[in-house]
Length: 305
Image (cartoon, rainbow, N blue to C red; front, side):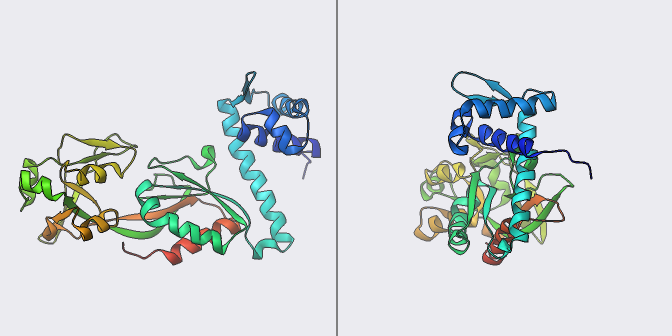
């Protein structure tokens, strides 16, 4: 094997990562116990080696270029794998440690997963969790994530998709809305109602409603004057305020149904659900801290919610 990196270059890569995360050579220098000039020289060495500009510099901060963002993702992965290898050969694999970056959809995060992740931290105190709440698909390499949970897995053959649970769907509305607009009795009645919509970030299209009638599954595109994007919990807030009918996950509105703030309708056409899965990059070796979180979530979450 030909030597490609000396100690100086590996150190420069670490300083580049610190600078990118802090968006500042000065802040990176404080963390590393060096001078800002030393950090600037380290980044300049990398740029000269690569033949590209990694940062756009200003007097107050530095900002990654497109090439810098791509390089950062690969550097993070490489440095994490080196750290994991050191833990394993030194016997530390028995106690997973390090950072795991996970992206969660907002409804699942608030209603199901954040309490579970708090329990995970108590079980694995040496693992740090960085949690992003987003309903948008992520780029694992460019964004530097280890795991994601999604209801619709991105079409990437390089990803592992492991089902976690099925989330039951239900149609609800506030009692005052039903008093004003009437209670729908059939699916055809939906055409006469204001149906709250969620717009998919990936396609810009509204989510079709799913039903089961006479043993057959079907989808309906409903209409309404209120649409939400990005935050899946927005339509539930509108429904509580009497904004219209809403099809959503039962776990989101279970407490509202119990106390009567919302009322279930069209129950005879229910029985549909959507799966939620763990998604992560395919690799022969998964870091022990990531594997610990995967196994924990699979064990803690029920198959149906």
